[in-house]
Image 1 (cartoon, one colour):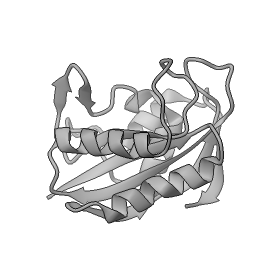
Image 2: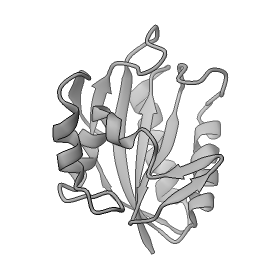
Image 3: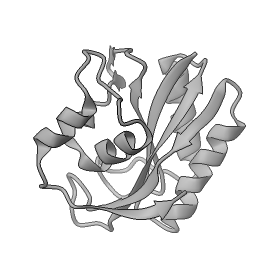
Length: 162
C-alpha cells in the first residue's frame, strides 16, 4: 500500500463539479482509498495564460495500484469527465496528475514521479502542505522548504472545500 498525492484541476464548465467528480471516481475505485482532500484553490493558468482561471485541489489516497495503474486510472477519470487533449497547458474540464508517491521515483516517457512541475507550482504545493504539513520529496527535501523558496510570484486563493 502506497500513499499517493494526486492533483486535480479544472478551468472549464462547472469546475467544482468536475473536481468533486474526480474524488467520487477515486472513492469508487478498487485498490484506492481516499484519505484526505485539500481545500479548493483558485489560480491563474500556467503556460498558456489566455484562458480561464483554474480550480485546484489535492487528494491523498492509499493505493495498491502501481504507478502505471494510477496513470491509467487518472486518464480514465479525465476522459469520463470530458477531457480532450488538444493543446499542451490548454483549457480542460479535468486534469488528474500524480504528484508524489511515497518516496517512489518514476522516469518514463509518459510518466514522471514526482510530477515535473511539483516544485515550481504554488497551486500544488499549498494544498499538499495543507493536507500533510510534513510531506517531503523522495530525496527527503521537505516541501515546506520548496514552497518557501519559490516566493510569491504565483497568485493562489483558497476557495473552500470539496
